[in-house]
Image 1 (cartoon, rainbow, N blue to C red):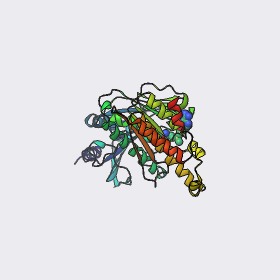
Image 2 (image 1 turned 180 degrees about the horizontal axis):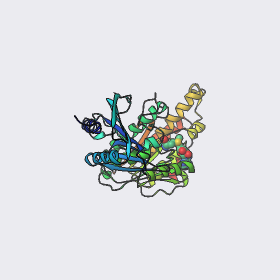
Image 3 (image 1 turned 90 degrees about the vertical axis):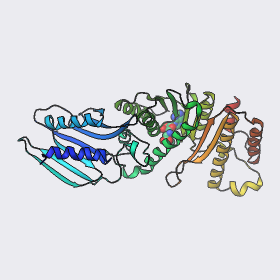
Length: 390
Ligand SMILES: C[S@@+](CC[C@H](N)C(=O)[O-])C[C@H]1O[C@@H](n2cnc3c(N)ncnc32)[C@H](O)[C@@H]1O
């Protein structure tokens, strides 16, 4: 009969090949051993290949190393022989706890798995694409807990992140000029905590094995430091956060310009910089629409709409974003405007996408349409128009 560690290794192999492996932790150092207090091993997809990621926890830092399964298994056997006394294996079906004693004896306990809400991160052979290969950044950013499960109040954010990666993936595939662009240069204006920039970095680097350089531009120093610290600790070369004010930021050569939930006219400033940089894709999710809200005067017949704050608000949103889309078209971009996540998850869910093309543009007709809208609502100028005319 196989001994207790062998039984654990057999379940490890089986759960790996059936894509049921969630994680394995090794803990309780053998006497006299100086090593990481704990090693957590999880599946990741690196360059399209399923591997095991070993995160070794030391008092002041974590060290991560990834190995193909066969090598990982050898390391696990070695670590249990020489360094650790407890192994805790979680699969989608069960949890197995192996306790080794100093006298050489061992016990093995099996219980039903309590982990139900998040399956392993091996996107390559999952029926539904997961969009995220290396979930460690989600743990660092507080979306997943340390066991790799989505925190109770972070489900919406998690879905939003995955949806966003899915959208960008589709847009990049539709843009012929981006097909062979290496590295793909992405700038995120007003990156905030960096959820979306981390997710794009992970997707292009680990799932597509495609070089990217991603810069998050942000005002708040604490967020820049945190983003850079996490990126460095995970070894994410090519992902950087920079201090900058969108309006003054000198945009380098950029393939994809992002501005998600940048306030009011900061979205226009970002779009304008993207146009000037000839970005192939300009992707923005506008936030508030104060400029046009204040600029709407409207004639007598529009008063029933304009007298109600919420209706004026929605009217301002529609006008602001319609004119943004038309102005993008005057600059040689095909535009799409759509809801990128259902309103049930967030109110700020409108996305404007500009896809650069080299076809002739019916500029005059577009400018006439803009003029007619402005006239109807008594608007003198849209902020983005001013930028483009300057
Ligand atoms: C609402 S958050 C959105 C964060 C992220 N883009 C997202 O959608 O999850 C807006 C972020 O933009 C930053 N921000 C606002 N105005 C800015 C400006 N003019 N220049 C640079 N960053 C700005 C804020 O500090 C904040 O972190």
